[in-house]
Length: 65
Image (cartoon, rainbow, N blue to C red; front, side):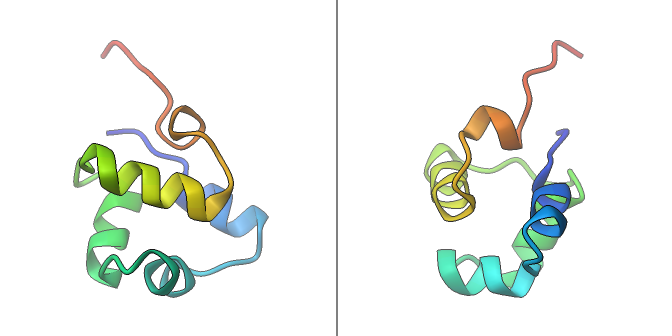
């Protein structure tokens, strides 16, 4: 699943560890999400979007493929 997690973190000068601590989501799972190797639950997507100050759609842009 295409994601902008890493791009947004870089723009904001934040780390995956920072995001993991803030959201209480494990660092390895954040890495898998950022790499597009995992699909978040709706609750996880909302927690990440809230922490990053973005909408879910900004982090995971809709794609039909």
